[in-house]
Image 1 (tube, helix red, strand yellow):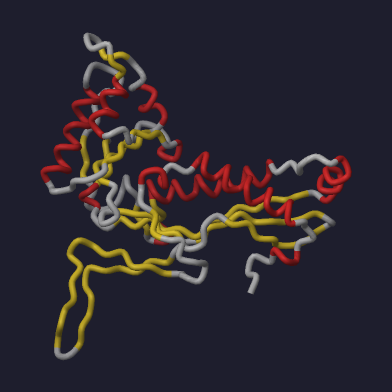
Image 2 (cartoon, helix red, strand yellow):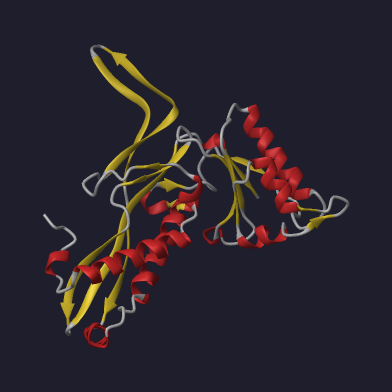
Length: 270
């Protein structure tokens, strides 16, 4: 079954390739969570629910019945945004012999990518999902003025020490809102070294900025798959919805679920 209804669209294979390429390219330019968190999948569009196992997961045996405790099931939410391609634009580009303007498809992919990152960092109360900044059990460290002195370096070192003391080793990533990221673009007095370079060296180079964080926020994550990942059912795809008033209605969509298994592997700077 062609659940995306692409076969019903009067498009050439070349146009579909252009749409798909534009969507993937636009999404990649925005997505931040996928740059540091492991991906689980794609599992396919038919996978609707997945478990999130806590550190205390175990099987309980009781009177011939075995049950798993420390495991919760969540629906993989669908993220989407719609756009239109106008019939006159398609006809004109075909007659003129130049590529179709796919700015609308790119804009929708941008919105869906931002939705995914918002889920990663903040979750969604409506579907009961927590994010990296607000999951119960996340470590909290008070953030000083990261635009002055060595405060940023000292706070981040404190967070890294906290993770190490709790036994979380492996790959680390620091993700900051743009304002904090820019405050580290300065030379540390007496060292001749950019503050951001010192932080990157401490963390092995995985220092990122994410517009989805808003402002004045930063998180440090031990980003191993046993701690946290992003489960993907249907990766970024484009569906054909309808022909209305001769124009074409399409949808950029995906299904994705951030899974925080061990919130103690995360430090949120507040």
